[in-house]
Image (cartoon, rainbow, N blue to C red; front, side, top):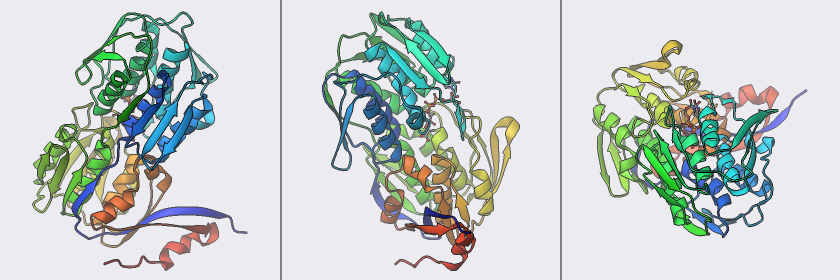
Length: 447
Ligand code: EPU
């Protein structure tokens, strides 16, 4: 008996230097909370440069399940109307696919005085705790309790401004409490907040819709409560993680790549780390570039809240460091299980050892990477396998493409623009035959 299933993979042939310029899409992690924030607005919200990634599609479905109307206009524009918002309970079937959906809690609480959202629990990259979100909602006067896997947050008489200090600058908690506080009575001060560009973009969106928020981009955000937010047209920032991924894709091939449509102020830590490796970096008002012809050594990386090195680029950076001479230590301080992709990198010939006790990886380079069939288990780990494949001698086939599609719009097309030989291939695979499929098919050589 055979069990057929549709499988889509990315197939790439490494060993080609990438060169040229490519424009990056809009930020996933800015678009998702801005979509949640649109529930606070009583007029139509137009989001421009929304990336066409599956996480955004799931958020669209979630907003619709709550009574909002979402229309796609062209490839990258979303029009959201929350005039008929009625539901306060987000369905588990959709929420479990998307951690960012927890942002709906603050938006629903602010708009309707009640939210029931499934607790995120954990995911493949680590624990997703919610204590800081809960602490912030309570400080604003909400009643917070858990029931059957849901967090129920209620404030029937409205929220009131408060002084809230976070023990850690959580991106999600900063966003969520900021969303709730927009309609609170009086002034809310949030201390030790996340300074990530996506948090700043959310505050800029809210202000464009009529909110009164200041201090975003510093460690203290002040929110003066308002009565209503109106409709607004807003363009999200470029995706700094996708931009960094493209730059590292160029660097691992020792090529020279420019990424347009991204703010260089979002890339300080990445550009500093690449420079330490001997990669020549430059930038203009809205572009960054890296020429890796002179890459000569690895470097140590410590992930940290912005402006530190982004955890979302840790896997891709590790792939690049595997090809650099010397020993590099990569310490992950944001998530407690973000090295799952390392096993696949090792199968491609990388010398990487994970030290579980210190949540760090030790990379010894330079490794000559070899193509292999590998599988992505999360968005950024998947991107790291693509980047590694670009430096590998032979063909790499990456399964688990659905993870990569959650966060990157047309990754293979952006890489093709830079000269990569990469294509998406899908077909019905009979599982009994799947084992031999990879052995018998080869990718056509391009250019
Ligand atoms: N944390 C707590 N308590 C809380 C909230 C968070 O202990 O109440 C812990 C988490 O358990 C985690 C750490 O703090 O270990 C970081 O969590 P944070 O809230 O800062 O991150 P997030 O909001 O869950 C967003 C991005 C992630 C990105 C992180 C860090 C979105 C949709 N997600 O997650 O992006 O890695 O910030 O920058 O914006 C990705 O795009 O692949 C991705 C995982």
